[in-house]
Image 1 (cartoon, one colour):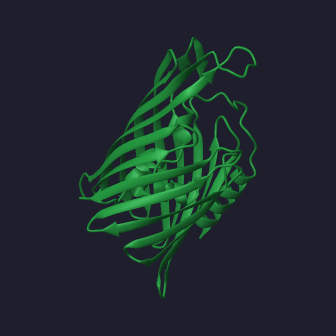
Image 2 (image 1 turned 60 degrees about the vertical axis):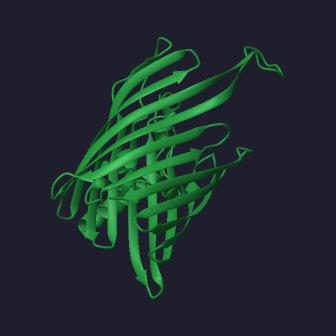
Image 3 (image 1 turned 90 degrees about the vertical axis):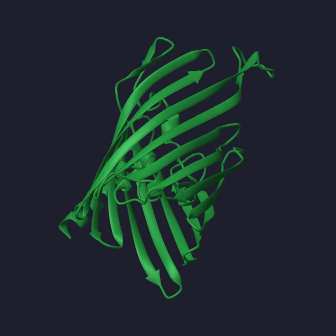
Length: 296
């Protein structure tokens, strides 16, 4: 009980925290994007949802996960597209590992040197990461660590780097989990002769599951404090009237891109198809996200 109360106090402190001194100076912002339709539909609570994609959001979530392969296509705001491919496999009775490939591409970015109605040119930007992670389950605790190699190209400039992720989960009860992760930690990188820090991010999250007379329900919450931006949070609600169908909704707090999220998932014969609808604010449009997973 004392551990649970301590975790709740830490979460409350981060909810009211301010902006880091390095606001706006982080490199590779794509690392902070949600990965997977289920996570997106649940308000971005990836640290406690979607163990098949834990290599991106919280390596400790891999502990005890089933072997699987997953692929996803995400139409982000504007012309940005995100794709990924992951594989999860058990490595003994208590260890689970994962490998993943992720890409983000944006085309048609307009280039101007002065305020004009017509751009001088257009260019593209692309990001690629190769990820690996392992996790171990030790009673009520899960511990995970990950490594990723990153490459980014913006028009004619390129940059490469690497980063590590560390995650920790605590299960005070079979229906409750608390998670903490420190993501995207690595050495500074250089782009166009300028040095930038990586977007190191603290994440704290929790999920509670409950059985109902008709199905099951889970409630999730997450707080993120990145190096280069303000503290953000998300919450999600998932209801499964039967084991094959899941209905989802969520909300993102203190996020200028939007608030409401929604989606659904269908599982049959080892296959799972997830969909998320993420409306954007400020004429950003609506993002549609799809994920397909196969249990092995």
